[in-house]
Length: 210
Image 1 (cartoon, rainbow, N blue to C red):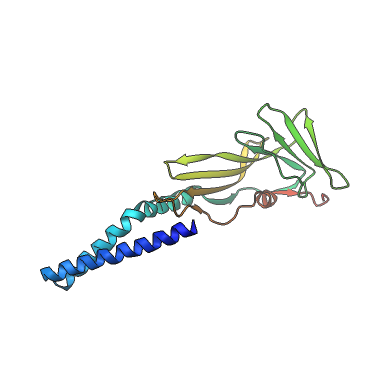
Image 2 (image 1 turned 180 degrees about the horizontal axis):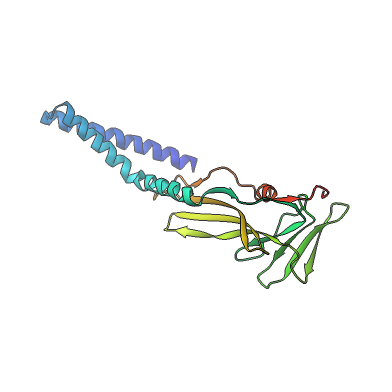
């Protein structure tokens, strides 16, 4: 990828130089004057920019518009002394990390509806068992990616109070796949998202745990 970017930059600069040179020579022969020549040079630079990068620029603008609506972290309520929660992911088992991070347990379900409970014993070992019913009141849910057109994807992560059926917190991001050249895939916000740290912010584990 780095070699491809380097070669592209060289070719692009050559095209830029040749384009401006041709326009200036043509303008000089026609004796168009400074302002007309400057206008033609600017128009040439604009065209040379738009062909490879125009769709990327428009995509970045749309990404930031979507990010204002869906991106970032919003915490509506913090809950204290939480024993555990349900880890849920659309389309499959939301398998949690192999540690409890201060909670007594995690729960997760598979496509067949089986509930797995992960608990940590006094030695720090995490055990897995199939539970008969849900114990967790709170759900950490990763929503299936939502495509907006062909180039943008909205990703959402929510923490929900299942008993009261309300959203406690959300985190959203918007991914842009880049322009037609395939360069410049970006996301907003561009900071790494730590799901466990986010959950800990909203669902405070009991002080006596871990």
